[in-house]
Length: 195
Image (tube, rainbow, N blue to C red):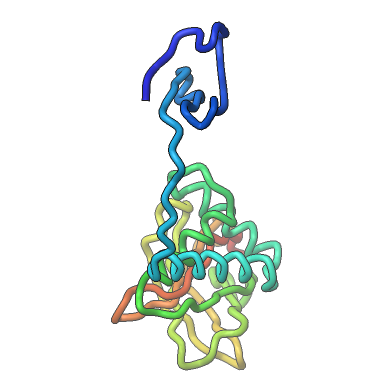
């Protein structure tokens, strides 16, 4: 790649010339490089990874996500450190899990303030009793250090954390842990004000 000044007798140029050179902006600099057709070997591993991307895309667009689920993925995206959307944050987590010898566990549901003062209840739909669901929580979305296991009650996973400060906003992230391969299910970062 070469840096150019006033390419093609202009102050900027973009695009290819006769499949020989490509002009493009790069970090605010006018640059030029040789035209190259990218390789696409279509290996088995590459096809498997593309299948995972297709699966994640289909899951995001066809499964039901309520507004709190979508907001949670968006909040997670803001704190990952890269510029991305909630969809991108979901895709990243999904592909991390599928890169292991594990199946994705979809965690979704809602958080409701309830129980007693200092308690919060989280209901996770669609997860069977044999699954373990872990929660990490804290007062900021970047410091979710406290953790607890959820209890399975009447068809829902219930988080009933005592000792929380009434009137404080808490943030939560849920995972489905696996001792063998690490987490196989994630949520975004939810928030709720404790009653």
